[in-house]
Length: 184
Figure 1 (cartoon, rainbow, N blue to C red):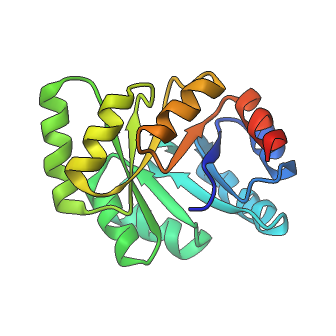
Figure 2 (cartoon, helix red, strand yellow):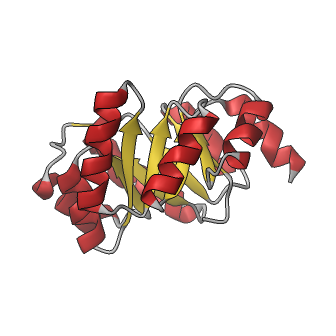
Figure 3 (cartoon, helix red, strand yellow):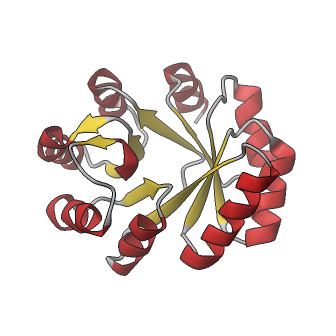
């Protein structure tokens, strides 16, 4: 990805703001499955590439069948999930796969490493993204591109995440979208 900040839209109002921006790639967080067709068409009209967070699509089960449906019906640029089967199906369908990894404790970290070894996603989204030493560790241990997300609130935290090895930062904080869009 050539974009170091990826806007994440938790609401339709945020999605509409993203459509008006110069950003090419965006993430759609919570959405009802009935809205996906409309959202996909809007994104296409604006020349945007969408990444859907499969675990947060209401009315859709985040399994092989749900993932297949999303890939066939909406041709997303990418899919995010914590589920191995979603990541594997996305890869099979040629869709960018992003495995979400929560940095909760050592046990969860170990489980995540084992899962990532199995799925080999295109990217790992590390949450929270405010732990630069963990971003560096995950990148070194997995040799997979990193997205940093969660609890990133300032331009300095974005810069620290990138300096620590994140390839991009995902954020729903619109002030950061505006800040970095103006800085371009």
